[in-house]
Structures are given as structure tokens and as C-alpha cells.
Image 1 (tube, helix red, strand yellow):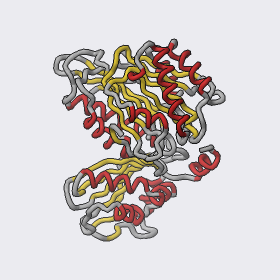
Image 2: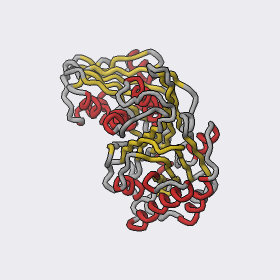
Image 3: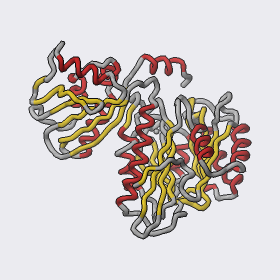
Image 4: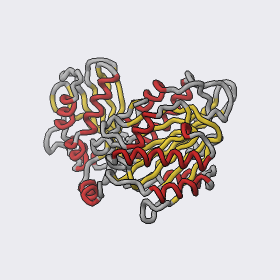
Length: 408
């Protein structure tokens, strides 16, 4: 695998654009992603039962192929009743007409303020305009990414290439948005984080379980504030433009897809609302990988753990309390918890007893490590071989300020 500078139009046959259509006052608010040929697609959606209209529409219209995706920001089209469904379908129809393709090949997503109707006059004109401006290249990648942001401070991109055994070079790239309302639990067929991953590799069928596995190890393992959005969606599009043999069961290809997914997921956490620190948690020694994932998500979702990290407090009790609440099995006499940063680490708990005494040199060192921007935590449950990684951020005063002032 070769990591490269790239975005959603880096794989062959993809175009994109982002424009301002008038939902927001000034910022870009409408994006379109387009493949020159229909792409094999797999989608994962929020498990929030209060799903937004575009998510509900995508689930109802489940399709194995997608050629274009139209995405607006600034308005979530969520909790908008029958009119919201009509508006989501109108976005699909407008894009299909503007691109000259069948509506079944068009996907739709929205993100932004909940409970407001879309300004369809602005959107329909915007869709007509953007369809004629599509292109490939880094400037198109950036504008498309900018157009799906809400409270985000920065765009989120990742790209890599894999050389297949027959010599074919395939490219995988993606863009994402997400800063607040981040605690995804997405499933295929049935985030706010939005992510779109494109590849020119050949797939013969929708890779639903493979895609779910990638989601489980990336977007479903991040947390900013514990709130799962009404609008989470993660999409994989494979148009086959690179040629070569199918990659349905190619290990190297799926490792590359996982790399892009995890890179985007971590960028979402790094851009968490008000966040000042990235928490990378590794859970080992679990009864199963599933229990390791459960434990990891529980810990990074804990407000008490997040605030302890913000305050540079080596409060192992909060971490172990979250571990206990997860329901996963552990052997307290074999549980081991360490924290680290920049290659240094401190053991906080081991052998059933605390390892850091108040006001000790080890506590001073632990506080110093927790003052760094990137913080690693390793928790061994001591009962098996299950393992998982999870990513989170601290919870700060700024998070409260942002969400107190942001209309929801």
C-alpha cells in the first residue's frame, strides 16, 4: 500500500464539485460526487431510530449501484415529516435530470440544523448549476469536501494506492465531515459524520459484510460527544475504471480501504468540537474482538474519562469504572492500564492495585504525558485474545460554548 495525496476524484472516472447555493449565508453548502459509469456501492447508515429523511429514503430505495451523490449542508432535513421525504426525493430527481441518469443511480445526504425544511428553490437551482461544473483534481476535491462541512474547522481527506498481482494499480480515496454529534453506530442496509470513499477497483457485487467490517473498525470506534446523529452515512463506491482482476476478496485492497476509513475517522475526532487532545485507546486481552470493541467504545464515550483527560488527571478509576460498565469480562488481578505520549508511558493500574501514588514522581510524569496533544491508553482485560482500537477526544469548556450557541 502506498499512501498518496489525494481526494475523492483521485481514483479514475470520478468527478466532484462544491458550490454555494444559499442554504448558508456565505460558505459552500452543496456538493456533488459523480462517477462516469455506475459504481458498485455499499452504504452504512445511522442506527438512530429518528432517521433523517434522506437516510430513510436511501434505505427504502436500497440499490446496488450508485453513479452520483448529492449532499447539502446547513440543513439536516431531519424530523421534517412527509415534506422532508418529498424534498429528499426532489433532490434525487433534480440531480438525475441534470446529469441525464436514472434516479435509482442517485444517492442523497444532508447535514446541518435539525427540524427545518429545505429551501428547495435554492437547492434545485444549485443542483442544476453544480452538475455543469463537475471536474477532477485537488481543487474539486477540496470544494466538495468544504461543501459538506458544518461546525468542522477543516476538511478531511485520505488516499492510497495498491498494486494488484496482475500489475494493476488501484486507488482508494475519501472525504468526510464530522465535528460534533459524533458517536456513530452504522450498519449496512439499514453518522453527524458523513463519509464518501471512492475507488477505481473492480468489484463484482456490493461488499456489504466487508464494508461493515471496515466500518466496525473505523467510524464505529470513534466518539466526540456520545450523541449519534440522525444523518450518519458512510458510502463506498467502486467504478472499476482501473480495470484488472476483481478485488472482492483481495486482502491488500481491503486493508487499504480500512486505512482510508480509519484515517478519516481519526481526522473527525481530531476536529471534534472544542477538542484539544486525541485519545488513542487500545484494548487487548478481551474475551473476543466484539467485547474489546464494546469496552473501547464505552471508555472513549465516558464524559468523566474525557474531562479527566482535559484536566490532565491520571484518574484510572474513571477508566476502570467505564470498563466495568461495559459489561465485558475481565480479570481484575490481570487488568493492566497504561497511558503514554511521545514514546513514554506510565503504568496506572496493574495486578489489582493502583501503581501511581498521589504526589509521586510517577503521578507528575503521568500528568505531564496527559498534557500532550496525542495521548495513548492501553487497557489489557486479562481474559483472552480479543483486541480493538478506539479513538476519542477530551471534553472541554469550548464544546459547551459551541453547542450552547449552535441552533439545533
